[in-house]
Amino acid sequence: MADSAQRTSSAMRPVVRETYGPADLSGDAIFAGGFINFGYWHGIDLGGPLGEADRIRSQEDLYRYVLNAVGPLGDTKALEVGCGLGMGGALALREHEPAAVTGMDIHPQQLQRAHSAHAGLLRQEPGRLRFVQGAAERMPFADGDFDAVVSVEAAQHFPDLAAFAAETARVLRPGGRAAVASFFTADDAPGRPAELAGLLETYANGLDIARPVTALTGAFTAAGLTQVRAESIGRHVWPGWDLWLSRQWAAGTWPRNFLRAYEQRILDYYLIVARRPTTPAGKDPEAAPASAPTGLHSPVPAMQEPAPATQDSGGHVVRQSRG
Image (cartoon, rainbow, N blue to C red):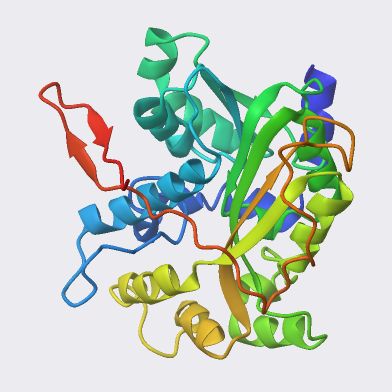
């Protein structure tokens, strides 16, 4: 086990090691709440000043959107790839009540922080939440271990999307679903990586890797997954993210160029979903009818917005149905 962890750590790219290790991105005020994502700002008033509660809600809502996309989680085993501090896994346990959630991250310091952040939950409900070191391209799990695989704002760091897709397909049980939220180039024009490197430091230093969303949808399909869809959700991400950034970063500074890249149709934010078929390829009775692959400019079916949260008399979050 120690040798496996050492091999995983040695495979980590230096820029990832620094950003999520000594630099501790989770400690930056722009990621209030410890989720480390840009947020899903639908339903949050962007017409006035934003507070920390708005920021935390935006990050929680991105997780809610992704979790809703894999369907009901009751009595299932779920895996998060790139779990960071484990805030999303804890939210999944609170609001979706799966049997168990495993958070996997390549960075040992992130896992140390996750264990510290959720020490009480780990003690109170042993077996329902665990954190494991592993790489997206080489997951330390058995075939068919999970009913759902999710990844929130981590795939932009994965060096090999084909290997990630193959591993996702392998660890999903037949009928299991995957949902990935991340940002990709808006098309496959060859100049996009250079354009993004000129606009955004995270592309210039290699932390984020410029690829079109079809790189992941194609990889999922090649790995044998079905019902593969990609939905642009950039309109609910970039304007709110930029408004929040404006509290700390002046116009013209590089972080503010995320919105600029979106407005110039260079970059977009996507939710990608897929399903492992229950039978061999071409024989899955639940598979969607064959159709042309969903391209970057093809219409994509809209997915359900996160339902508003209320609290019951015991203070527990209750999801309201849109139906």
